[in-house]
Image 1 (cartoon, rainbow, N blue to C red):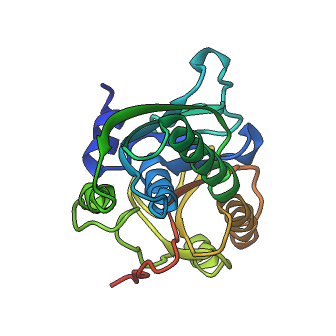
Image 2: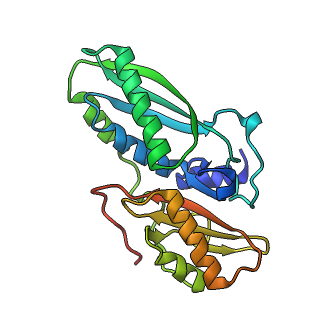
Amino acid sequence: MTTGDAVRNRLGLGRLLPLGAASDGAWLTEEAAVVVLRAAVAPLPAVALGRVRLSLADPEQATAPPVPAPPSALPPGGLRIEADFTAPAHRPLPSVASELREVLWSTATHRLDLVVEETDLSVSGLSDALTEPAAQAREEGKGSARPPGGHPTHPAGPAALAASVVPGVAHLTSTLGDSVHLAPDHIRVEVATAVGHRPLAVVGAVRQAVLAALGDDGRPVVVLVTAVGLEGQQTSTAD
């Protein structure tokens, strides 16, 4: 395990997933993706997700990112969703699996802007009680008191101020360091997106705002999305 992997695991971020195409220069934390996927699956009758992981479907086909990637980020490439689930005993298993696979794929693709090539499902058990999986899902969704994506960060500096007021930005975060990291060869910005906004659209707007604030000196703007807003989710504010 690399130092970057250890840091990400300690912070609970999981993998840093390529967001959109290689040319988009953006990543999404696995933690943020899993939160949204669990919320999408929650309405399915008597179905409960267990372990959920996202990884490269074919690491050998991944391409080198055209911009400096965040520490230990996965390179651009199609993703695989792996998930364990509990199914209701009174329904045909293939039907449940097909429904679950469609929800996971459509949410990852159309809500999170991830490129998903494979969805692998494993049945971890059957449930006779209609309410048991929902209760189990609530328990599995409980974690630390740390908000998804980390605590909001006050914007400091022209780039951070510009990024923080972009429509679709809920707040800036600082999971890997400063919310705006100014390196000699790139600029990295961390954001949490607001409800109703597609991550890639927010990424593009943040990039334009930062370049306008700092001036286009040739450095690419890399964006890391650490949380995606959900309906009914309490919005955190910087202290």
